[in-house]
Length: 210
Image (spheres, rainbow, N blue to C red):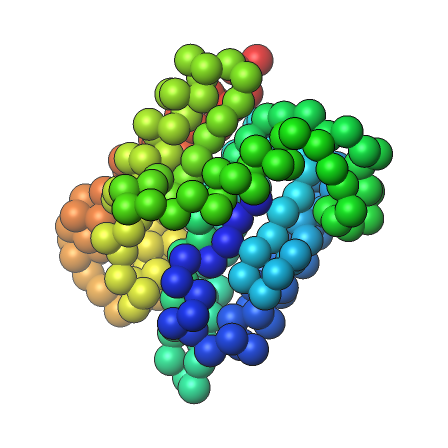
């Protein structure tokens, strides 16, 4: 489950349209890992059922990259927003709906909803709660580090950051963004791109140790 942080500070109609478009895209690119498709349940919330912890983690990481590569734009200007996530492993008592994550009941969904509703100061943006407590704790710490770094990113740098994360050729990126290679490499270090790549790799490894 996830919801938009401070959704009231964004234009409601355009935020809802952007969120639905992103969720539809996530369902298209992650069909093998999602048992019940990500579904917008309220204007600023969505939920889904993944077939594994690894599928859930990869879906979250995909959404984070998508928010940077295709941010909400209002009146020609980026109006970025962040999501608050709950990745919970729990029982679902009713049959899993394969077409829409709606109309299902169970203690797992109830607990996930409770976690998402807790919005006290200092609550982590990524909340991980799975049956393996040791792995859950490690994943939580890794996501906390990832969030601490990524929350310092500025929306005007999003496209550049995504290019750095996908490409290692600083000269090629420099031509694309009209920057000298050494400038690109300095920004790669200051934005901690290598750290993010290592943390994301660690998160994926922790979610699927096989």
